[in-house]
Image 1 (cartoon, rainbow, N blue to C red):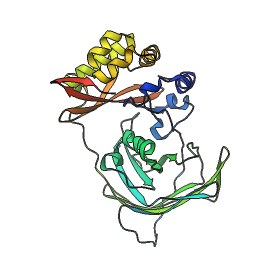
Image 2: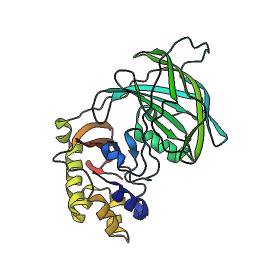
Image 3: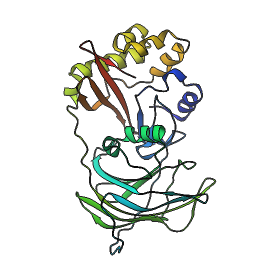
Length: 318
């Protein structure tokens, strides 16, 4: 599990040629607390950008009687940071297993721009949308008892969080079909040097995440799973020849480039296929995505790997 020193070293010395590597890492629990930047589930872009993250815990109050009528899947209001307001007009919600506990958790996403269907329920895709399209989001996570447990700010310059009883959520409806209510701060708050407040009303129909095509031990036995396992073994061993066998040609050639040594050192921190869990494999024709998780008493991390079928053979496609 990466620690703060390891993360800071990578932030300062990551190989630029592999910043577009589409394997990501998500941290949660105590492992995330050791990372210099954190977000909900502490999304850390392991290979692509290593940008935003935060962690926060929040107290929530439930109430009823909101009078504002909104179109479903919409929001009204926004967040003001250092005097600059960002309107959050789009609202989404979904329920899926938590990374660490695997218990159901519900996420409410408020955004300034519309999200693609995949980005609505996929942490990695939302991160890509922020990096690629400049989407700004405010995310709230509720546990299986409908208690708010974390908030993620992804709106520059504020990409951090913290526990505060001044963060409120008043719910008018919280069912497996919809969320409706208001979230707000009890006046202006301060996080590090930033002053902020938010107040947003929302009315959301729940989105059902796509289920993986296969998961668990069965996923490791698929053609894609076997390639991922071979890739991880080679990565951890610093085996350049082994990596070249399972990488697409465009990325395999990077291992002979000027940053090869950095890339190989970086990849040695990959998950161990002997102990890692295969949380899900989704397949779309000649492309696939694999989510690999490591869980310990200190927390959990998850990495996303993309694959392509080239000439009938599956390859890892950074």
